[in-house]
Length: 153
Image (cartoon, rainbow, N blue to C red):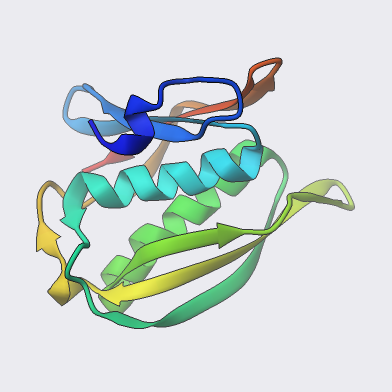
């Protein structure tokens, strides 16, 4: 349990946790905004496989993602994390999100990762290989937003 999780699901609080899932990794997040839930999902996924406390920063990566729904934005951002790890040997040390905006028939989100060299992270778990679409959830309600996503490891 980390500090974000121990805060609980209090109104206005953000946090995340991993939950047991057969042969995969599942994370749940909560925040006052959809963007906050997506950011917490990135943090939860990274914490599940890497201790970043001594990692060396290699730069920032900024991009905009467009998708049909908020859930599709979540999948796209997490797929970028998996891609950067695999293709570039980089892991997000931190993430910042702009507000989700409506564009045409879809949604758009500006994302900025502060990246670290994966070789400077300490492995603590299985590295995710892909984002699963089954059981995917990103939903807002009176108490804020919640997210659940499963990753293949």
